[in-house]
Length: 79
Image (cartoon, rainbow, N blue to C red):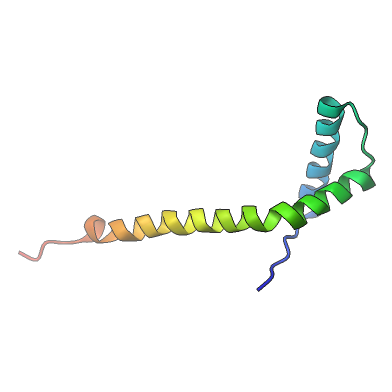
């Protein structure tokens, strides 16, 4: 299943502003809103799925650890 990563308008705007600041300070280059948006879209398309999948795997591993500990945490001795 291919899941498209979508951002709220607020988050997209903040990331575009961050890219513009980054390019200005690190590369001494100005980015228009359009150009920064295109870079963001490319980054989401190429890096997004990998980062998303890693986050899902990290959460799965964390939850599995909690589930593995559940028996010890809630077990009541029957004697």
